[in-house]
Length: 112
Image (cartoon, rainbow, N blue to C red):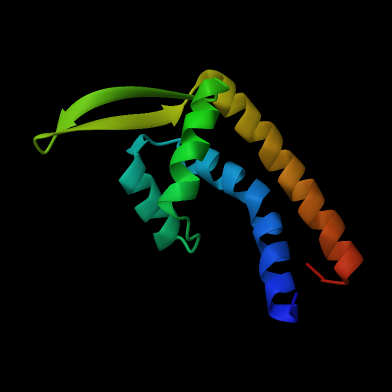
């Protein structure tokens, strides 16, 4: 494995947990899949459809999201939003993220 391949693999591992937090945070407001992906990309987090759609289905199965089908622009679209459980989990994960960020900044010698 080359250095570049090794780096890419580790980068994907690092992003995996971050994606969950980002999707939950973005779904404080209602979105359908494409608008969710577009908003995340606009904020600097690129996520492909093959990653996003299985993730939102899994989060819904875990009861962190609720969804409903609606007609918009002559098309049926599935809209997603945080459930009350999802809001609680988002708050806890956000606190955990901030604590972890502070710890890593200290370990890495990054002054805040």
